[in-house]
Length: 121
Length: 462
Image (cartoon, rainbow over all chains, first blue to last red):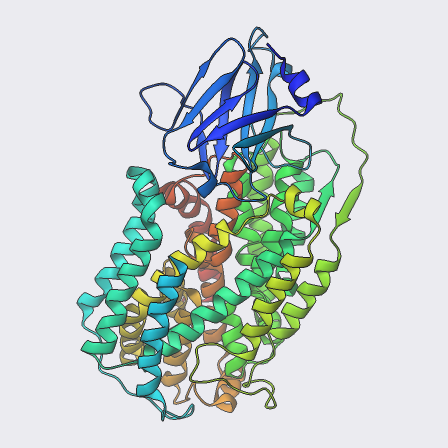
């Protein structure tokens, strides 16, 4: 299993298919912003989004969108606050803000959000 | 979707143009009054804007463009086939194109500018930003100032930002700030086009503008000093302010100059009537295209630039502009009938309460027309509007202040309100709903301030 740090340093890709995203690391998702939707309820009782952590990847479904490519444009991104699996979720320094850009051939670039980006946890 | 809508609009306006081809600009066009029931599409649209994001969010997000256009088309068909009045439609189409051209060009040009401020967020720094933004709103418009400052304002406050930060930003920079010049807010520009001196507004509004803003930022300061979130004593700040994409400033300047390229101001400017677009709008759209194409990619990325906020405004306001035609005409009729009985205070409250929900530019014009009518002046004659502004300034002042200030009462009161909301939501800030904004912020904070303005300036005046 790759750590988030390794994924970011190696510039590893994630994948997307329609409304499904696959991240090449295992992590809890605390908050997601897609378009104007701020999603913090990932429980099955709410339809917005749901994720599953596997051993070496994380899968997210955004149920409100059929195809993410239709809503996330060239300069836009999906923003996530994540905590890597195994790290203390209650330590705020472990909360990492990352951005996902959709590129061609179902590839998803993953970057750590810098100070220029607007993302309030 | 865009193609279908534009084709439909082209057909409708072609039909309209053929009917109005011989209506000269100065001629008085008299039309049958609309049936009061025709305000229903407008009320319905307002209700859906208010309730959609709350109660049927997903449906609303997917369907608001279709709903806004469908409700707008009800009004369009009623005017075309029920009243045989295409003049009102062309006139509204022209106002809409002007509105969206200005908003789009300012939105795109400011999207190419990045301001980075590396300073500790303090209540005083926020107050300075709100006051600075309110001043420059009179130079680059409330839309320009809002788009330029909202991102650095959020970034400075990133560890402590709350909805009230954004609400006070909308109150001051997106609305009240722009009350001093015709560039500040569209209604004042309409007044300028009709014959009011450029600096009249500054001379007659500043003594309401300044105390209102100072009171507003004092309330903000009081609330903000109680916000202890995100204070990290170990963080060091360089104090630097950095600008990127400065060439977009030139585009902003071109947009501002183009505001005055109007046949009503410069006689050499050709009018493209009866087309619902002018030279000014063509320049603005061209500048929007050029500034987008030549913007630095890094800056666009850092600003997360996309057209969705302006698309949302364009769709919602095409519905609002179309459906509000009957409402505005009925208001205009009533205002003229009862104009003799109206004092400055009534003009203030009537203009204000309607500007909160309708577009403030035509509301301003209707009440200006009614107040002129009270003294036998004609709003279509520039010299008479000019004379009125000197002989009876209190009426024009009441209408101007109300049209601009009350735009802050709701998200739909002024174009930039929605755009600021949209940018903040994309940044992960949970903004209050339509009713939340109105009930938790606008009514308790703004209404008492606007009442004080009324008591001091208009109470008891005849």
